[in-house]
Length: 237
Image (cartoon, rainbow, N blue to C red):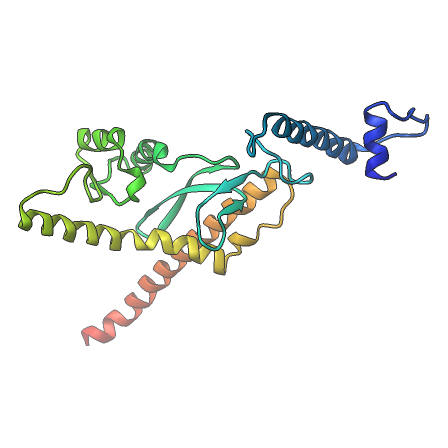
């Protein structure tokens, strides 16, 4: 039966035949279509172009449009991730299908670091969006250096300003590995091609990508140490 007939039966415009029945998937899709209709009707009535929890896919109703502001793709569709990198190992700290501000996760990520390694990090190299007053205050209270540049106006002293720029530049260089990890995950481990339909299976596939990346890193370190021990007697001789 066509989609038009489905909708007409759902809204009572056509009497439902006795043999008419929907399976589980069809019934779920029908509920999603009904919600899409309500969302579109609300935006039309209120002359709005956005709405909370907007549905953009009937088969994947958990996917939300996320405005990124990039030149090649201003809007992206998929899960948004928040991750941290420690000694080459990547930790998936948050996965959400709705858009969120990454800066609110920094304090929780630092607490997660302490729960894993039993101490706070000496420094945190984060993007400038993380440098809000709440995060700066938390890091200062726990003796953690948050990456430059600081908030407010630059110092008037030219030597201090140059030193601050130098530190900020080095902090940007130290942040390159975490950016590279996302590129590696997309190119080599198909993070940009998650083909699962359900939210749970998609989240599992994303988590497996980070697991495999960490296993590869661990294997490289293991093999490096193994071959280093093999060649050590020859080097000593």
